[in-house]
Image (tube, rainbow, N blue to C red; front, side):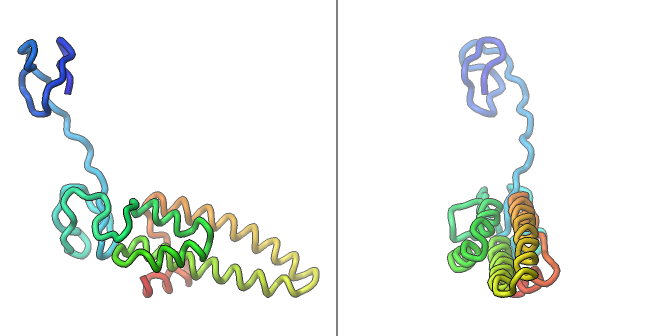
Length: 170
């Protein structure tokens, strides 16, 4: 914190400047950050001791409670979709505790695994299969972008069938 009169650095909480003795302005509270529950993946206000959804204890001051990886949960959720089912599988096998990351990893495996299989099957059907495969590819691309955005925003966005499967297996 800087003194408004002389510009000297003062320790947070000082009421007076150590250099010139001027009164220091009252500190404005910082907005509360996000903390994700390691058990259920729910978003909680930073500084709380227990999860508001499941009651599990939260790591004190941590942004990544209960995670076995050193990545913010929303970034890990985005990365689950980066290379389709491949990164989904990697994150599903690596992350053991964070339900938010495991949900997005499993949803990525189910959705993009199904797209991959369907694409291979359609490639063997002349003309009609190729046209449907192209439409499927565009739909997969749009869904890929949308899922990465939603995961990065911290949303547990469930797709109709794949989301239910992912939720059960996360």
